[in-house]
Amino acid sequence: MPVTKEFEYRTIGRDGKQVKGKVEAPNEAAAVQVLRQQGLVPLSITEGGSLLQKELTIPGLGGRTTLKDLAVFARQFATMTASGMSLLRSLAVLEDQAAKPSLKKAISEVRVDIEAGLSLSGALAKHPKIFPTIMVAMVRAGETGGFLDNALERIAVNFEKDAALRGKIKGAMTYPVIVLLFTGVLVAGVLAFIVPVFEGMFKQFGGELPLPTQILVTASHSLAWSGPLFVAVLTGSIMLFRRELRRNPKLRLAFDKVKLRLPVFGKLFAKIAISRFARNFGTLLGVGVPVMQAIDVVGATTGNAVITEAMKDLQSAVRDGLPMSTQLAKHDVFPRMVAQMIEVGEESGQISQMLDKVADFYDREVDTAAEALTAAIEPLMVIVMGVVVGGMVVCLYLPMFTIYQNIQG
Image (cartoon, rainbow, N blue to C red; front, side, top):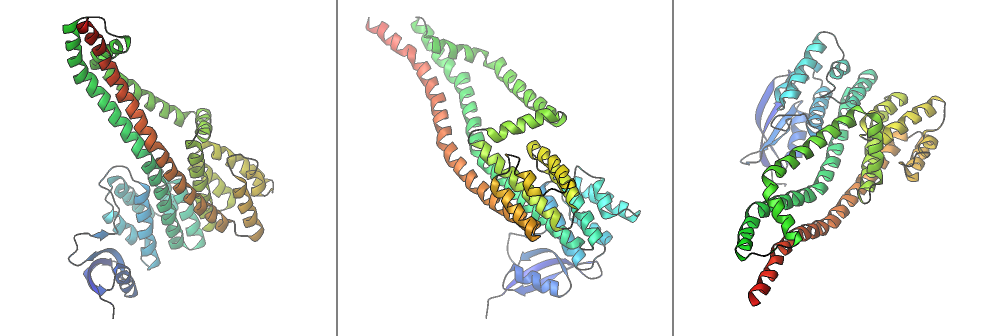
């Protein structure tokens, strides 16, 4: 007989009221199953005596609504609607559960709009900064087809995988960024505290400093004003460039083309873009979004202007009755395997499933590429830091040889 544990739970009952209690089960999944069999919608499950509470609430402590927040929101929403709860009651519970002020406010306004007669998709569409276009399109398809809970479940899966993809990229880039920041702080510390000590010693012994040492001393003298100026100029340039990227489609297209051609990083960026394209396209088609609308949404949500342009061409081709696979094969950003998989999907009538397989394949490719990139960057960053610090040490000790020769003479 399996060992059971005691779990404390908080659920929504059939009458829409919150219910708290305890249940015994072998594990958390079994406890959730028991509660669902009783017609309850689990909101939180906590193992008795455990300090780790596994809340199913919207995560975060405030600020911008993230994909993880939306994934949990969609999954909870799907569970409630599948259990027969009304939209308004479900939204009221979700509003109460939301931790992010921005999401809480948006849910409240969505609920008010639905009470006024607006559809769920129409109400969500009024908050584009919170609810992405792809989410609105999928909810609209779910409303039309009568499978809103399934659409919300697909939304949750899509956002979870997209968030995981972004997390992998951030993880791969964290190490080099930390090393660069540490190197910058180390250089600033040497210039601010170590170089002045050596400079005073050099003045006592006299003689002309070697050129590399003179440059280092000059940098030390100007650090008080050049350091803040450099940081301000760098920050301002980045902000200005990002603003121009948003405002200038031609600049964004050129920038994304360069990104895809970068050595080492280019292939990783391409795999990320293809994974997101396939995942979003497959998910949209899977919930019944019309092909033309799905292509339009995918073009706006892949995050890469090269694929956005390809989607415009794809729309024209589909409108003319041409196969999607033929048109995609004309764009270098899509490998032959992608076009071939979509061709198989077109012939078998399973395009959505094939796109999901493409997305899964490229998710694994991103995993492998990110790990390889991290492994390659780590020794490179150590070498860069060693060269910078070692170069400064050599510059400081060069005058010591001259001083030693003068003493010997």
